[in-house]
Amino acid sequence: MMLNNRSVDLRRLRLLRELARLGSMREVADELGVTTSTVSQQLAALSREAGATLIEPQGRRVRLTPAGRRLAEHAVTILAAVDAARLDLDPRAEPVGTVRVAGFATAVRRSLLPITAHLAARHPQVRLRIHEHEPAEAFALLATDDVDLALTYDYNLAPAPIDRTLEATPLWSAPWSLGVPADAVGEEPVPATAAAVFTRFRAHDWIVNSRNIADEVVVRAIAATAEFEPRIAHRADSLDLVQDLIVAGLGVGLLPADQPTLPGVRLLPLAGPEARLRSYAVTRRGRAAWPPLALVLDLLAAVPA
Image 1 (cartoon, helix red, strand yellow):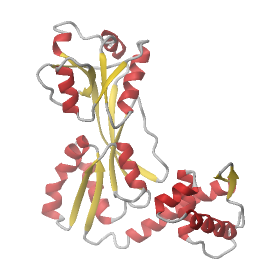
Image 2 (cartoon, rainbow, N blue to C red):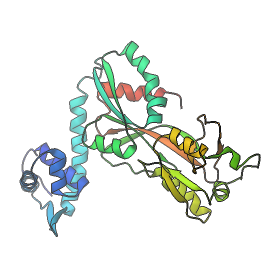
Image 3 (spheres, rainbow, N blue to C red):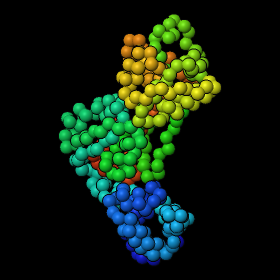
Image 4 (cartoon, helix red, strand yellow):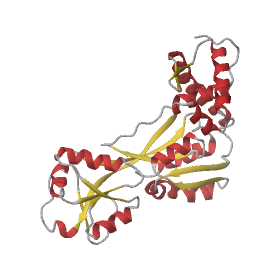
């Protein structure tokens, strides 16, 4: 594949990258606020520039040819480099700007809020705009460039793939336990393994997150080692509400092992396998050098784990 022109329109490369990500011209058009006809015409022009067929029909849709896939992979790197060049004009300059953050509530409290005083005192021209979102929502906002930074999480038992257009920096991790009604266990010894803990509560209803499937994947994975199918009865995003449901005797569910609980909730540790939440700071490739964002990332990395 050879480029027939000395330059390639970056807008066309961006359309190809989005087609590789989304899979249809209609979705690309909707995502970027243009018509499907415009997408088609621009990709046809890009094919002429590349001197190769980049897309081919697949039923009523299209798909990338091998040459199209290769150029789409290059587009990720090229566009990230262009973004970096635009944003990193003067890394020595005092950071100025608003950093838009989408993150899950625990990370906002544990990672983001501790750095606000430092920013206010030493970098008053850097502002944070914070939106509370679960990881899938935060990734979508990154993809549409509606936020600059996503604070996300996964579990060691439910690892989340990171798109190659993104960069993820690990922040902190924390063990999770099974939250159960305190009167359901009394003074009995805690079972030694996660499977044994789950077996004791196999007849109970189970509570999982309403906006993210990760903890449900963990629950089902551990339950599978205990050879039973958990009965998912309730879904709640708020950990406080999960605790309220447990106190009311309506079920059991995963809770962070390092956070205080309500009276009436007991945490049973999980081991062999351990359930551990892992948090990340995620940015689009090529954006982390933007001075305000680079500052925030450095401060996040310095927050004690």
